Length: 272
Image (tube, rainbow, N blue to C red):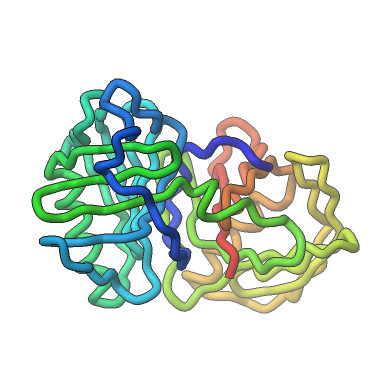
């Protein structure tokens, strides 16, 4: 499903890429009034500090999404988001509203989270040239590429989709370390599932934007938290029709839960 990309649920798996972005001194680059950022996500291509290459944590990428008066961002581990404006060519982020998830990662990624958060709240200037965006704050320059160009939408079938966040209302939670939940859709109309503890599979049908999954046949092992909690959340979403979108390497399943239910609203997966 190839739709313009807006804010994603807080997803926290990185995508390695290597692109060449246009320079910010391109005479055709747009001015502040011409910024076309709403509903788009950009991934880092190149980062420099004091005109020298700045090495990101191994395998990581910087990510920024723009939507209305909100931005969402990640630097390879946790996700952050908050209120922002950028119409004047400068990104103004309300530091008090910039919330971040609290997933534990390796120290280089944790430090990178803090560094990128400070960069975003330092009022960097924005220069856009089509699908390229350059963010400049002090001596740091981050060249980025529109995700639709950098990472084309994946196919539903043939990939292992690994759960990395669960949405309930306005709350987004990460998957605890050591717990794995995944889906693998086959071209034969069968899906293999790992629920967090138990595993199994069953039939599915795809109507283009809605998946009908099951009935699923799974193992019946007794599970303990946190795996049991993840399994319960995943099962509660998959036990009915779910709408879905694919955005690059991200699959988002949105529940059709009964109003007033305590079940999660949605699940976000990434290709393993």
